[in-house]
Image (cartoon, rainbow, N blue to C red; front, top):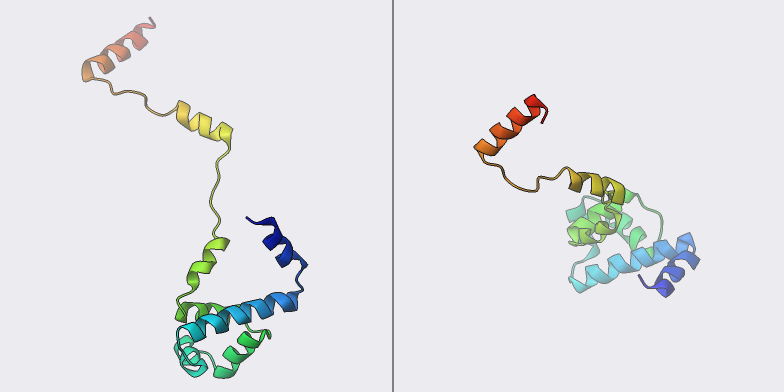
Length: 119
């Protein structure tokens, strides 16, 4: 991740961030040659709500998601995906228990007999 880009987001006010989101939505809507009325109708929101979003005013998160879906921009939600991470110790334990080779039935039977005789 570019540190300068990260620093720009951090230094932005909440209003600045909301304005950036609104500009993003408007840019993509216009690139797709869609009117506010069409996008709003397809998203199931009012045109005035879409207008508020594009101007950087407060709208519900649900409205934003609906608009992202209509504009086929839900891929930006990937940043919010949480991936389960495993610790190196836990990984080593899993690897230790992993099967290393296949046994024939005769080897398995002999192994069981030897264990019973405690050899």
